Image: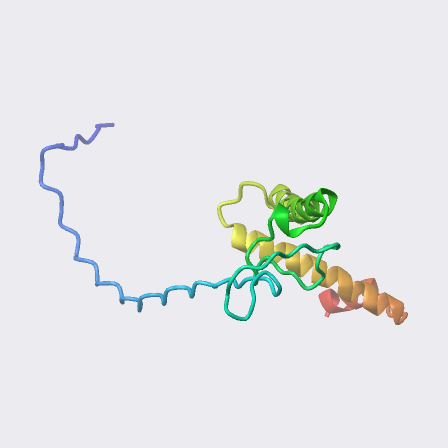
Length: 147
């Protein structure tokens, strides 16, 4: 058996030039959300007024309003309770993301893996609904795969 030697300095055959990719239109820049002062922090002229609340405002939203400061609360415990509630919401969000990452793992195509998990959850919900209606789901699958 003879081994074929390849000359590394030999000219390589030229590849055909690739067709230019269709250019995508540029993405529109995201609109910056302008947060407004919480009602009561300023008067009608926009000048700051002394504002202290005795409770955590139910209608306060951090997405809409500028941050409330410690000086806006009648007592320190209200301010720290509000901050703790905000931190708890962040913690729950991160725990959900960690749980999803644990399920998906270090998959190259996370989008498809997440879609598969979502479809599994929908299938489990559908199975539950059918079983509540006294429909034998396993018999349906057996009939579908047999015929």
